[in-house]
Image (cartoon, rainbow, N blue to C red):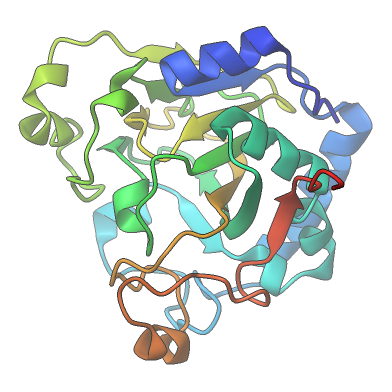
Length: 269
């Protein structure tokens, strides 16, 4: 696993809001991640643990954007070992220049044959906390191309983003009705080989094309939030009982739900 970051990579990420890492997983690691995540996906009907939703939102368009399985680490010990990897957490902390990160959630994003595009959106406004320093690693389990649903990013736009957002729906460009200054920005398409990965900031606008092939495009992502992040009033993936107990401003520090993945060592005094 390629978890060392150069100063140039960190600088590029902070300028653009995203970073591609080639050969993040070697061939053996890729086969292992594929097998473990496939097994976890195929043995889970629920989209989110405890949601009892049969893996569907009830929106025919969104349900054909991708097959989504959230928090596989909670239902698969094997995936838990992948998600809570300290070295990946260290990368997230280094890119965002924060001393510690907690897991927000993981998710498998399997874009099936002939799947709809993923419209332009920003991640952080969906979540139960607001932060300019959250980040996601997105790992390609298959080759990801313009033909089968590669990611697109708007370089540098995260610096101007607020927490205004749109839902992922049929209007691929609805986000540009909210952020009109981005209308003429040129996106970057990030094609990946299986085993490559990318990081993107939680406020980086991004999208994915449709899958115009008869094969699935599998990806897996892990979302990290800075330790000390606080509740903003939105449920998102929070269990109902915890959601009902939280007040806006409470720290999201439940170690069972959002464990610390990386903590920088404190200097000795």
